[in-house]
Image 1 (tube, rainbow, N blue to C red):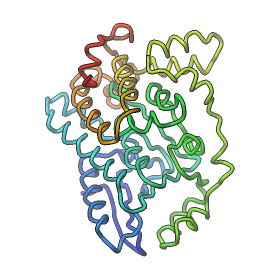
Image 2 (tube, rainbow, N blue to C red):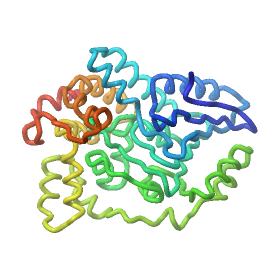
Image 3 (cartoon, one colour):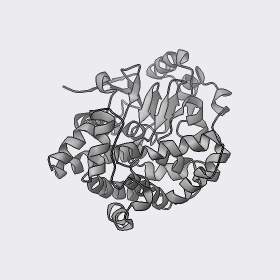
Image 4 (cartoon, rainbow, N blue to C red):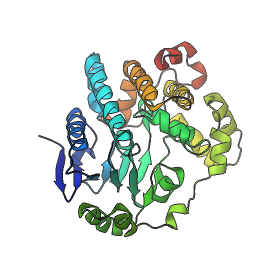
Length: 336
């Protein structure tokens, strides 16, 4: 059984993500099937444009199949973990280098792996129901799928903020930050999709729904984000936030970071720092090596248990505090 559907008509190749019970979380078969389709279409003259949509109203793609990865880690199947992440990153790089327009319509959650198959593409259309995030530190992991490349290239401090807190970004804010390229109200998304499917010029199709004014409105505290998250030192960031007495936003950020694995926070900050001066393929290679190592740690198994298995949201990470994490362990995972 395949969890994607593909079709070609009017010069448009469409991939529909169709694993609704798992919010389209990417399992190994979806990655393999999507890679195969995209490779065929890259050399198919009948396909001029690629459109990726979701068969679920709740999500575009909620991420990777993390529970399966945890099972592999617990059983000691390191080869399966390497295969999963290696093939996922290969798919993401294929999308980043795709020779034809690659369009994603994001209406609902797009997290982790969902960003991997969208952000690297040429056109990312979002609605007011879109929800983007990189929440990996809460499961003892780190933002991967090339995030260590694109996060440091967002506005000042934003990449570190998203990576360390797992903060969620919606609709027009995603356009403001550069995670998305077009904002379309949900009520117009169907018309935009049908126009693209008809083979209409993209400028014309997107023009049916784009809300230019909304795409420039933002409620994000960009000045604060730049001030507090413009550093790569996790202790420094936490110290600044904790020192902002009476600032509810700063207190909320401390709480979000407190939900993450201290080891993951430090790994994330270092990978984002390194990614700022690396090529995309270098980031993928570094992420793969780090993923292999961090999946073998107790924090990963515990984080996934707390968030996705037992869902008690009460992980017991070790060490429990950033200051107690061994710098040598961070260097080992990152590959410094």
